[in-house]
Structure formats: C-alpha cells, structure tokens
Image (cartoon, rainbow, N blue to C red; front, top):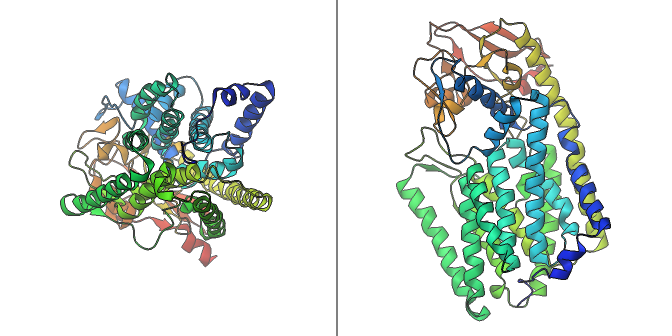
Length: 489
C-alpha cells in the first residue's frame, strides 16, 4: 500500500461515533446550511426554473393545462421529483429551502467522505475548500440534479477506496440513486471505481501504463466528438484543470478568490509530488490528472440525437469534478498554519461577496414579483432581463418563482428540450415549443409571431425598476441589459 492508498481503519470509523465528534459533524452541517437561509430566496439560476416546472408538472399531471403533459423519466429527475412532492405540502420558500439544504448536505458530505478516504482521516483541513465548492459555480447555475449525483457518486467512490468487504457493496445502490439524479457523474464514478480496482490489481511500477491508456482514451473521445457529434469547445484558457474557476460566480470581483484558491491548490499539489517520490504509481494523482485532462480536452456543449436541445456547460461540470479529485489527491499533505488561515480568509471573502450579491439579486426578483402582481392571473410572460456583469446567468429565470400559482413563463426552456418531465404539444398556449426560438431569445432576438396568445414582456425601466408591457405580433424581443441601465444611471 502506498501513500496514495490509505484505508480508514475500523478504529478510525469507531472514533468518529463519539459524542464529541457527532456534535462536531452536526455543528458543521448546521453552519453549512446558513447560506440557504440568509436571504428571502436562494439565488441559483436554474433553481427557479426547477421550482416552476415542478409546480407546472403537478398542474399538468392533474389535467389542468391543455397541451402540456408529463412523461416518465429515469435520469436527470431526482431533484424535480423532490420539489414536486414538497410543493404538494409546503410553500415555495419552504420547498426550496428543504430541497436545496438536502442537496447541499448530500454534496458536501459525499465529497468529505471521498477526501477523508484518500487522506486516511476525517478531512476537516479541507472543509473550507469543499464548502467553497459546495456554493461555487455549479451550485449557482442551479444544476441540482447533477450536483446531488456528484455528492452521491463521491460517496460511492469513497466506499470503493475504503475497500471494506461489506461496505464497498453499498456503492451499487448509491450509484443507482445517483443515476436517477443525473447520469453523467455516474459514468464518471463507475470509470473511477474501475480505475481504482484495476490499478490496485497490478504492480505499482506498471501503473503508468494504465494512466497512459486513460489519457489516450480521453484524447480519442475528444477526437470522436469533434468528428462525429456537433460540439462547441469553451474559448480561452481556463483553470478548469484544478477547479479554481468554481469560485467565479457573480462577477469580476471573484477573480481574487479564484486566484487565491488556485495558488493554494498548486502549492499543496507541489508538496504532494514531493511526498510521493514515484507519482506515476499514485492512484489519487492518476484520477485527478485524468479528470484535469478531460476538463481541458472535452467540449463545453454537444448536441445529441435523442435530445431536441444541446447538453451544455460540460466544462463547468468537469471543472467541479477536477476540483474534488484534486482535493482528494492532496488530502495526505499536511497543511501549515498560515495556509489554513489563508484558506479561511478566502472562504470568508467568498461568502461575504456571495451574501451581498444574493441580496442584490433578491431585490431584482422582488421588483419582478411586483410587476407580475400587477398583471391578470394566468398571464403569459417573457422576462427580457439580463445582467452582463454576472459570470453566471442568474437572471435567466428571474420570473419563474413569481409565476408559481399566478402566471406562466412563456419562454420556459424545459419543455422544448426533451430532457425534462414536462413536455408541450406544438401550438399550446402556455410555452414556446421550438428550442431554436428559445435560443434566439437568449442569445440574439426573437421575433414574436403568435397572434392567438396574449403575452407580456418584463423589462428594466425607469433606471431602477422592472416594468411590463404587452407584446405585439412581429415585435422583436431581446434581453435588455441591466448592466447597461446601471451605467446610464
């Protein structure tokens, strides 16, 4: 067994059950949930869409919306099923908090288990990094099915790494549940577990061959996607290989946090190589290196034949997996006091900036809610609002929560993609069914042609407010930039 292959002993597992340790875990879980309750609503772009479509699915399943229907789905659906169930009993605010806090706990403790497994002891020294990743870019995008699946899959990989004869079989049902949340992390976890088991079955001196085969496989996959599948690669040089770009959420000010996180990770990675004189034998470093290369080589968006819409933000998702595996790879490295203090300062700065931006986005959403409240019940609306200062498109679904029980988001993207439970028949009066029209609205302009459905537009007005007006047939709709409006003020 090498430094890359620690196994948590039964004694270590038993010691974690002491009352003092149980209290520590409970306190950490409570503190971890604070960003989910510090503002009126949780600001995570697709969360509002998930909530709205969970409500829409309940209405469509009851037969109340002609032209909309719900289909069975076996992946990319766990979070939506949770929301639909909660909305039958709880308010929108309670539903989102229960569901998101549950997702946060699953993600964090799954990552914590993996890093603890590779480090051979509870990963409290890496908890600040894992907390930052917990509330990083994937969280703010609102990709909660993917997010939950990652947490469960990290737990499954940890079970395989521990290699206890009974516990490791729990990885199978864990992966089955994770598949219902999202298939992509499950594929990643199965490959990682297969790699761990294969690497342990061969002499350490020959593991470099397995690493080389993995790198060749990733290159081959990238080449096949480029040749045979419509694909788009993310532009520019990115820090996806270490996951530092997960800190880039609500604007340029987060670059300082991302840069600090990048430096912290690189310093510990260098020390990790110093600790292991034969890094080509190190399974933990292998897993991170393969993921880092994948995050740089694979496309950011692909268009698959069985989906109407594309599968996007792949680079951002792979960046999160790279960050987790890097934390796992550097878990055995002792952290010095000044490094711990610096990491705590980075996390504090990140949470402080997040709190301020959460507050500002909640104010915008409150303005949208007031505009919606002035419209007749059942109105179809299109929110033509964006803010180019944000790295994360946090205003993409800004009207969805306000519409629950009151109006319909005519530009709701989910039914048109064929990737979600709610589907729409062409010509229905509740939502656009052509994904190209949704793309035109998001990225260029949409010429509104419908004459049979009255639709209202929400847009920034009067310098500081959100207004509504009725859309005329032939009118060109564009997302108006609140950033430009702010500069005019």
